[in-house]
Length: 163
Image 1 (cartoon, rainbow, N blue to C red):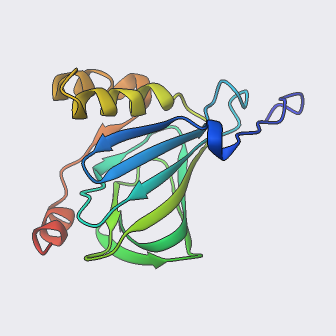
Image 2 (spheres, rainbow, N blue to C red):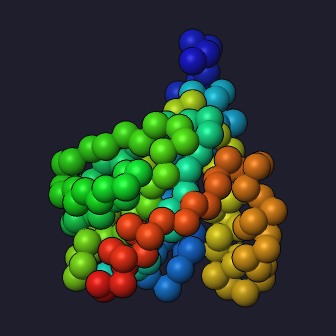
């Protein structure tokens, strides 16, 4: 981490919020350019029925989830854990993971990556796909740039089939 990185202050009223699906929002907090690569952070608001994020992995960063409220299901490799308010988990590089609110629940989650990675562009792309302004092919084409690699998970598919 660069000791000369300036502090990052984001006021709730000025944070950019994106809609990446019918039942989910992403509030942008700090991207790697503002933290000089130290971290990237966002707030994920997942309403009941949100599919969350499909199984994927990152090669360069640890992803962290801190549940602010509600209940979150998280795929960690081949197992699924359910986190409640105040629970925290880290996902190391290359470990396939996915997340969604627990059945019948909502989840409010602080998500962070360290070291930081360019993510805000990816979240904006997800919103454009949701609005029909971009396609799934654009997401596939961005996987190296945003270090977001989708992964087939029968464990996660079985979990979601129960919803």
